Amino acid sequence: MVRKLKDEQMPRPTMSESDEKLAIALDFGTTYSGVAFCFANQDNTKPAAIMDWPGDHGISVPKIPTVIAYGKQPPGFFKWGASVAELDTGIIGIKLLLDPEQERPTYLPSTNAQRDIRMLPKQPVEIAADFMGAIYKHALDEISKTVPKAYMDLCSKEFVLSVPAVWSDAAKNATLLAAKRAGIHPVTLIKEPEAAALHTVKTLDFSIKKGDAFVVCDAGGGTVDLISYEVHQVVPNLQVKEIVPGTGGMAGSMGLNQRFAQAVQNLVGDEQWFPLKKSKAWAIAQRQFDQEVKKAFRGDPDEEYFVNFPMVDLEDDPQSGLVSNTWRMTGSDLARIFNPLIEDVLKLIELQVQASKLKRPGTGVSGIMLVGGFGSSRYLMLRAKSRFPDIQVLQPQDAWAAIVKGAVLSKLPGQASVMSTSSTKHYGTSMDALYSSAKDWGQPTFIRRDGSTGVEKVSAFDLCTVAAVRI
Image (cartoon, rainbow, N blue to C red; front, side, top):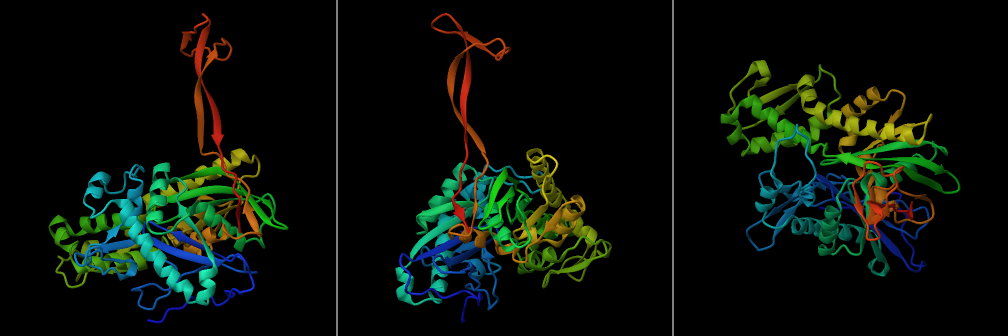
């Protein structure tokens, strides 16, 4: 199969530059992952996403499934991405096992993270490293097709890896360890909604002005992450600052797939469900729901979608829409699957909007930007517009690739910057202070060595990152 990068406008780097740099970003997602790159020292350069992947059958897309399947022979052999066949026992959602302490919504099927980890052929960090290493090696092969080998060898490589805004420190450390084992080192981390903001704001810099504020909602496969920004400066270089710390939750679109599976089980009953879920018919139905129905649903009760379960003998249930191994799903059926997750996403957006209003009394936010795979949902867009009628809701055309392209932009100097971020944690040291009846009334006290009354306090400071991220 012949592969080529689809960014026709990408300038070719010249050999006259010194200290050449190649910036490479990896968006290691729960359900889909992607890579983008840029030769950083070139004028008017733009990030280009890798568009061709093993097993993609000639279809050019900026992301491939985050799935890996290990074979028995030879030792260590595995398939990854689109190369994993439908009936292979592929491992999905491995990213979530890097942070098993994340709270799951009650409307999703229960799971035991420690049990899931014990059933894996390797530890989650090792599996993540195998996948990252495979996608990185393929990306280098694709990038090397665009420039002479001598120039490629000349370039120093800078890596950036996007992570959810709500990722715990332990999960960030596990992600960095996996990247290092994959040969992606040294690497810097960037919050997914921050990366999305860099890309989205840059593409909209013609229509924004100083003082504008907006919420970035990165709704992906596993997590939904949000951060609010204010435009600090437009010219000569675009500058934005974070006004509300990142928030998020486990309301990604993988939950839609899980709720679809539960709906099918309820439709056909346990006796038919257990053999069905082991068949190729179920793999076909899952793919049809994930790649067609989920993306097309607009929220109209009169919509109809047909999901097929070929080569099985399911009992007809015309009243529920199941006839001849085909389920006629109505808009109402889909709304029941979508609504709990949509409602969670809207609540997260609302919290950011309210927090921004407190920081900016009388102004609040002027825009909400939906990015990520789930962020591309037509139904989510419709519901967001309905919930926030006085705020402009935007869906960038390349919302699916916004994170990985924005992560690359964070490595490009001279055009714009995220000036600062907000504190997400408070740290301090315990200290003994002299008791003050005015300040410490009601607090537990003790007698100090000198006989005075003391009270235990915390000498605190904020952990706040000042970013030197540029696009």
